Image (cartoon, rainbow, N blue to C red):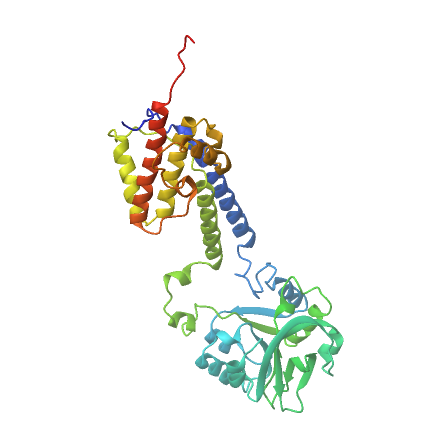
Length: 411
């Protein structure tokens, strides 16, 4: 006896049309991500490149302020190195340092040396502790707070004329009694003006630079305060620290490959990876129809049965093996004793019929209920005994069926 095999079916070839049908969803998703990334990059390109640059019309640039200063007769000179800033900060000039915390100690010392005995003004935007130690000794920076409209709260004429402005960021503490403390933020000033020494420059510390941005300049008194702080003298030196400075720390630090990758590309790669995972999950659940395959050899039924038995033995599955033996015996006995196959596994119907057939058998086999619906054998020896008893029960009924008198068909 051999197992039945199903003829193999022919699988259609992977044509170009089928390949397009399978991959068009993934390609459409990738195309949408690429278009969205390019659009966002185009919209945000240069957004931070012109930050606080008087030549930039970006939202974070300061071109609007430079034009207002020019209308008041103030000339603006943009410098990008500490040497240029020190050389340009002569008498009757205002020196604006947009990012003082990126300067090295030597650069800060050079600026202080060049401006100490020169009349004018120095404006520092959001200076931290290191910058304060070099350019504003005796001043301490406290933790930053959020920007919000704040009232002057001081006697500084420029602040009183400007009124409410958008300020926050660092707060400053000093013991100098003559200092002007304006725009209180959490009990500490976010604008501090240190008076000038005889023949020297006064110093203005702004906790945040947002009020100088193009997008905020027209709000409240931001423009007025900016014009008064930066337009006191006829010449304004606008210092934008950059990597072109020979002593800039950015040139002293070895930059790796990842440092050269823009931050936006990291988020784009993360989105692409997430999209790839979603596409893999989507495609993995579509297993497709089963494809029948012709077996290489014909396997006899006896070998299949023996293989199942060895698997049961290896797994110690006596419960499953005994259940299979009992179910097969009940299935074969039911038609012999006149029980419908639908009730072959119903004890209340099958057992009375079995006992009726065994009533004349001597000696009587084991109890049919224990054999056909009993508990799981305790060990392998009990399982073998159960198999023998089931064979004896089936043989007893089969032999009785063979020797039972039959009516002649002519009677």
